[in-house]
Length: 257
Ligand SMILES: [Zn+2]
Ligand SMILES: [Zn+2]
Image 1 (tube, rainbow, N blue to C red):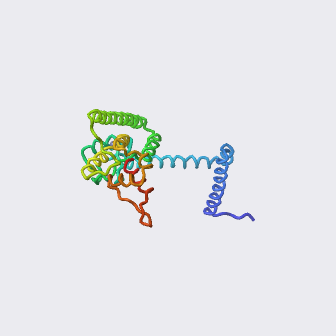
Image 2: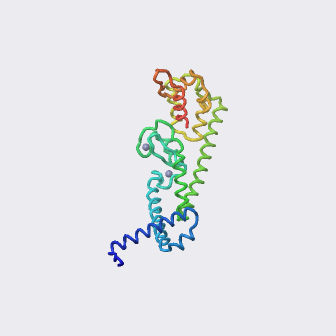
Image 3: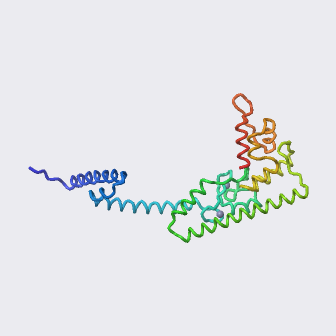
């Protein structure tokens, strides 16, 4: 005698069949055989279509949420050429640099600037990916326009900076030399530049004193100690109490990044 199923049991049987079909669908989809799976179970293809739609809607919501995190606190737009400060706050280069010319603190939390701002490459990449996935073409165009303006600003600032250096060199200005131990006044003068510049300008500024990436990596023991003293860097030691030169080189590299 044939057994009759209750509604709940029928639902369960349907669920199991649906699950099996879905597993077949996933297996065949992953092997690239979508047509076969659709023929086998077209209603599951519809369910999957619905799930994709919901997934897409969720994705749009996440992008909106992320914009709050990935927007600059100064211009309230997507970050363009983002630079991060020691306090971990990030701002667009074009927004941050004019602020740092007159202030020695973070525009967001007012923490004192203890080391130069450095490029936040990961955030820059995430923002590019987010903007690429936007459906609003106007917003994309505005972002691209801001990227162009930022690059123009970069170049203009750098040219202006190089112009000042060249003029000073022509006038016989003597720049600080990293191989000599600086007095407190000289340290302060150098630190003003560290707080004010970032990126290419910072590299150029440090190189004027001889403090290049190559110098930090190749300097002899005494030279690296003098450089650390000039920059007021704490000198790290290993478990034996000896100077940890490798770590010291890394600390100095961080300073000029
Ligand atoms: Zn900004
Ligand atoms: Zn901050």
